[in-house]
Structure formats: C-alpha cells, structure tokens
Image 1 (cartoon, rainbow, N blue to C red):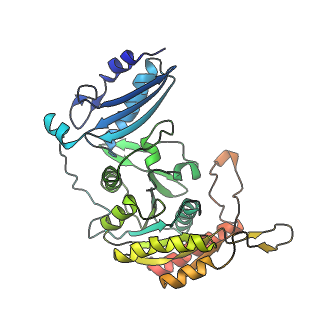
Image 2: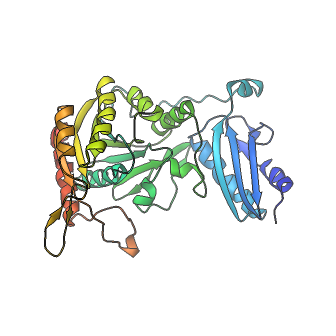
Image 3: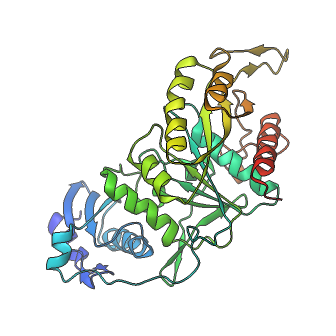
Amino acid sequence: MITDQEIMEALKRVKDRDLDKSIVDSGGIREIKNKEGNVSLKVALAKTGTAEQMQVQQEIVNVLKSEGANSVGLRFETLSDEELEALGGAKEEEFTGPSLLAPTSKTTFITVASGKGGVGKSTVSVNTAVSLARLGKKVGIIDADIYGFSVPDMMGIEERPKVVDKRIYPVERFGVKVISMGFFVEDNAPVIWRGPMLGKMINQFFSECEWGELDYLILDLPPGTGDVALDLHSMLPESKELLVTTPHATAAFVAARAGAMAIRTHHEMLGVVENMAYFESSVTGEKEYVFGKGGGTRLAEEMKTDLLAQIPLGQPEINKDDFAPSIYAEEHPIGEIYRDLAEAIVFKTRHN
C-alpha cells in the first residue's frame, strides 16, 4: 500500500508547467489524505483552469496509480502572489487567436439563471443547448455552476477534453461543445474555492478553450446572485438571460432577484421558463399542478419579458447504449416543447 512518503516522492516527477518546477519544489502540495491507498490531494499551481492543469491532473493520477494508489481525488487552488514572486513568477504566454469575448465575436451568450436550487435549471440548460444544435446552430455550453457541476453527467459524457498545443478542446456530445468544472476534478472531489479564484477559472474557460465559431454559448449559472454570477455578468460584453422558475410563488419571488441583477448589469432579459409546470397523466391525459400555478406568468410580468415555455414534470427514456439521463429525444413530447423553446430563442435573437 502506498505511503505518504512514497506519494511525495512520486509527485516530485510532476512539474508545474508554468513554473518549470515540480509541484513539490514549488510548495504546491497543500494537503495529503491517504486512507488505505485512497489518496486525496489539494494542489496549488501557478494557474488553474488551463490546459496545463489538465495535463498535470492526469499526470498526478497516472503517477500515483502506478505507485499503488487505488483512487486519486484532486482539488486545485492557485499559488499566492507572494509565493509566485518568490518562485520567480509564472511564464506568461499571450494567446493571439480569436476569442469569444472579442468585440468582433458573433456569439450570442445566454445565461441560464435561477433564484434558488432545485428548479431544474441545469436540465433546462442542457436541453435548450441540444435543441438549438438540432436546429442546425453551432452551440457550446459552459457548466458555470462551479460547486454543483452536473452537465457532463446529465449529457452522459464520460471522456475528458483533449489538450492540443496548450489549448483545451471541449468535449462534443449531441452537437454541443461542453466544458465543465467537473473535468478539472478527480473522483467527484468537492470544490472548496473562494470567489476570486472561481472568477479566474471561469475566465480561463473562455480564453484557454478552443471553441471555434459558435452561434450560441449557454452558461449554466449557479443559483442565486453570488460571486460567479456577478463575475460572469461583468465579464461578458453582453448576454441574454433565461430565467428558470417553478410555478411556486416562492421560487418565482427569489428568481426575480437573479433577473434584477442581470438588468442592473445591463444584460437583456430573454424570457422565463417555468419548469415542473404540471404533471400530465399518460393514462388519462389529465394535468395535475403539483407545485401550484402562475409563478412563471407572474415572474415574466414582473421582469417585463415573455414566458417562453412551460415544461411539465417528466423523465427522458433511458437508452443504455447511448446513455444521457437528462436529454429528451426530439420526438418526446417534452423534447418538442424544448424544440419550440429553441425556435423562440432563435427568433428573439435573430440567428437566422
């Protein structure tokens, strides 16, 4: 069974690419937990959210497993400015290629927000993205819900992004290019980061990823109005916000806060999606309003925008050969509602 000393020795072979020093010599090993060969590490690098981090991440896993570790969980943070200065500073490499944030970018950014968790915001995000791709649009999605990342699992994504010439190539599924915090942790390790570090990570998703040309980039925001949502609203030149609520009055009330923040940061309200609007019996066709009625309509009126869709409670049919537990087939009744939602978005954003 691998020991803590053997772990440290093995990690001396792993270099922080931005410092050209081992992660041991840089003081980057913050924490080691080793329980019967199940290893958990906290590692500090010069830069996080980069192609180099993905390479370091895989190298750590490979090195430790080759030395006898059963599993490897990883959390990352950045070295402090004082530490970087003492180490001689990180190598700066300016990327001169096209950027989604450049003034010439033709990408429409759609932030999907909610006032609280549990309203199905990520389900709406992934199905909206897939439905736009089915309409022939070039679509990407950033899983910006840093603490509650779920997009890869929802879309049945098991592989990691490829790194080529220090650029991260998002994983593509159902015609949608995907990047997520979930790709930057191992063994579902928890993310325990402070706000400024999260903002840097999100920024890297724009600058370090090779998105190509996109018509739409969907950003699945964390619920509420915290640091990540605020950073994104200030980072984007302009975006259009899709506000997700349930019919319940409380969900609609707190969702209004997220909508108000978008308006204050000079972003456009695209519309409201009322999720879990009702349950429709497959036997009788009768609708039951499990969470009440009217939340979506009231929220749209308060935000002076449109109620774009009312999506019922449901479950996609699971295909074991093409597993994607949250993606509705195009011919599914709820899949048809998402297609109508995508068509409404295309009409409102004039991507013809």
